[in-house]
Image (cartoon, rainbow, N blue to C red; front, side, top):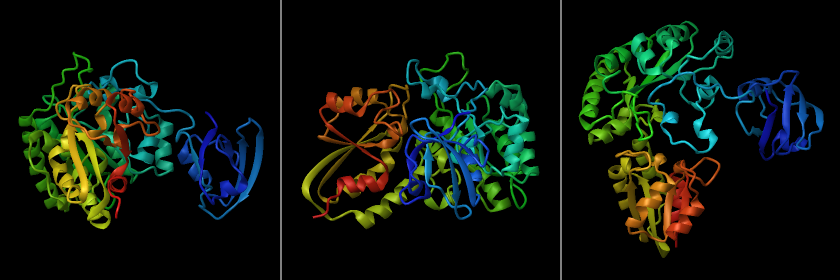
Length: 440
C-alpha cells in the first residue's frame, strides 16, 4: 500500500486554498488508508476530515478540514490504485498483451483484470481472480455497473478460452449480480470455430436471461471479432475473422436482436462496427444504437463520430480561411470509406485542402486496422510512398495518453525529423476543427 501521490490540484478548490502541492501524498483519511480512488472518494464525502499527509519534501502533516458533505477537495492522483493493480490470472490466447513483441515499455505488458478500474473507467474483467473480500466489497460499496468479458457461458468453452477452471463459474457469477441487484455490461469476443455458431447463440440467450426484472443483472452485451497480430503464439488455435464469417455472424446476431427487441424493447446484444467493416457492409443507421450502451467496445463509435462531426462542423466550420492551408489526415483504413464525406465537407472551405491517408498496420500484421493501432513504424514505412503535405493531422488516440509516443515507442519528434513534416496531434473533432479552420 502506497500513499496517494497528488498529480494535479484543481483551481479554486479546497486543496488549492489549503496549499497542497503536486508531489504531496495522502496517507490516511479519518484514520483509514485508502486502497484506491474509490476509497478516497468515499472517505472524502464526510463533512469533517482529518488527513495525514506527506509533503513532497518528505515531511509529515496532520490537517483538519471542514467542508460541505460530498464537496470535492479538488485533488487528482498519479494512479487510481494505491495498493497496486490486480492482474489477470487467465491465459486467453487472444489477449492483446500476449500478442505484442518483446522489449517495449513495461506498462504495455501489465494484464489488467481489476474490478476497480472496471467500475471507474469501464475496462473489462473476467471475475476469475476475485477473493471473497473483493466480492463483499463490490456488494457493500455498490460498485455497479461493472464490465465483464464473458466470451461464452458454456463452462467447457469458457474454460477453453480463458485457460482457467474458475472461468466455468460465469453463470453463477451473473446469478450473484442478479441476487445482489447489481449490474454488468458483457462482451463476447468471437473466435471462429471455438465460441461462434451455436455456442454464440447459447451465450447471447443465456446473457439475455439475466436481462430481466426491474434491475436487470446484464444491461447489454457486445459481440466483437477477435483481433490477431503476427506476434501471437503459433499454437493458439485461433484463426482470423474472414469476410464470410463476418457476414455469417451479422446475420445470426441480427436475428437474435429482432427477438430481443420483441421481448424487451431493446436490441440488448450489439455488433461492434468492425463486423460491418470486415464484411464490407453498410453500418446500421444512427437510430439503431439507442443510447450507445457499448460505445467503449466500438459499437456505434463511427456513427457517433460522424454525427458529432456534422454538428460541430455546422457550428464552427467557416466558409473561408484567411490563408491557403494543406493537411494530410492520417487514419486507420477501417474508417476510410466512412470518413470520405467528412473530408469532402472540410474541402468545401475555401483555401483549405485536406487529404485523407488511410493505412493498415504491417507492424501488427493486420489487413484492416483501427486508427489507434497505427504505429510510428507503420507511418515511417508507408508515408514516404504517399503524397504528403507539410502538415500532418494525427489522431491522438495513436499516442500514449501522457506522452508523444506511439505503441512501438517511436516518438512524434522522430517522425517529424525523418519525414520532414510538421505533425499535429488532434484530440477529437473540436480540436481538429480548431486546427484546420481559421476564420477570415
